[in-house]
Image (cartoon, one colour):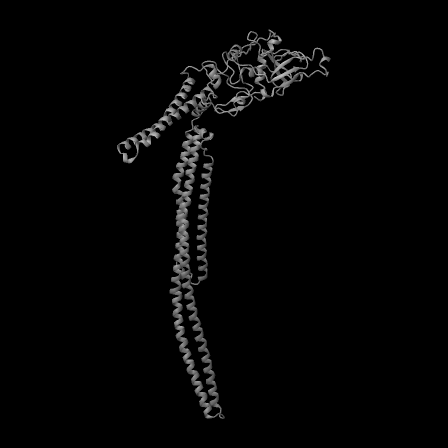
Length: 611
């Protein structure tokens, strides 16, 4: 099968078909190019996705990746990054092996096609020229023959006419002979041109056109083969990265299989274990025996002989209230929880001889006051409001024992690493100094003395600091005797071997990582033994007076935490009204309590208040 013999008369159709083949090739090139763009875009999006979920350095997220599930997720992100790299490889290989190669081939194909069809058109023009010459000689021969016939007929007519002179007849005869000669010449010329045209036409249809069409056929077949090879390359480029992509997926599966739920649970224990013991049972409180207290017993700062006993049930003997001083705690526990009574209706205090009476209610035990305190928002928050804005203690005493032990251990390890680093630097400087001593031309040994002394001083400082943190660590672990109660109260340290502190503060609860969150807890418990509580804070100084006040009306303090006053009595103010309608006052430096703010006229000392 040959286009030269089968399609000898389909020059125009072949021209259209070959142009369509080039268009198909260019369309395939465009397809591959768009595929490479998609691969690059997909790889970029995968990399951005992997980068987006990577843990940020020096952040809390980085600490979370100690869990096996998070480690597996991190491995998945890394494998996805490699997976994206394989898509970039696909794009690069398709561009270099298909797109660039085919674009160059298309240009060559266009040049070859142009050359072949140029030769075909040239052959067509040549045969058309020969045909025109043949037609021209044929028309000339036909015209000469007709002219010769007319000349012969004219001669015969003249020769038959007796009236025509002999000269005219001779002239007609010569004219007829001339026309016959011209016809013979035209015949010979037409015959020659016809033979030559037939020869050219045979060569055109049997030699030139078949050769040209054969070249066009071979060109088209090469194009078809080339596009098929490109499609194979297209598949091979994908197949080459499949093993690596499979390894990436195997890595993800392996990371998923490495997840250990038990290990993660243990890490949660290590991260949040406080080291406290669970609270003990609550002792039974007998309410059948009424609490009989006088006004002086209800005051807050009576003498030690008349000091009220704070009773809290439970087995938490020896426990201390953390972070809050005695006078502030007692003020929170014993502050009246009902609204103060209104002042007398009369404008003059004398109109009511005995003054207004505080609303009477049954006296409640101090444990009830404590329960109300634990379920209500105090004015002074536990520890956080006192420490807000302050720095974290150096010994991490603000943390629970277990978390404090971990922080101290980490600090000791970091210091040991720094000591090792400084020691290596000192050894290097010492060796360099020895080299300078042996070879003075290399440098001055004295120039290293300052640096050596500085490094030695740093090592000594780091060792002292390490000893300090090791002592704190040994104290937490029970290897050293506990510090004094005063030092523990200053640093807020938790010690389970002596007096344990509370596990939570109702309103400001301490989180395992040292931060504090203000959240209410209805289940928080505080068990403080009254004797230990008083012994712990016996050395506390009373609150200073911030002013004076005058009783406008007589008030009988019948509720727990209140104090009775007489109209016209002058007293000291130690705590002004916080918005609840009660003012804390003191009488004779040994008796203090709350009275309604509307019952007294307060004169605050600006200097004392400012200080």
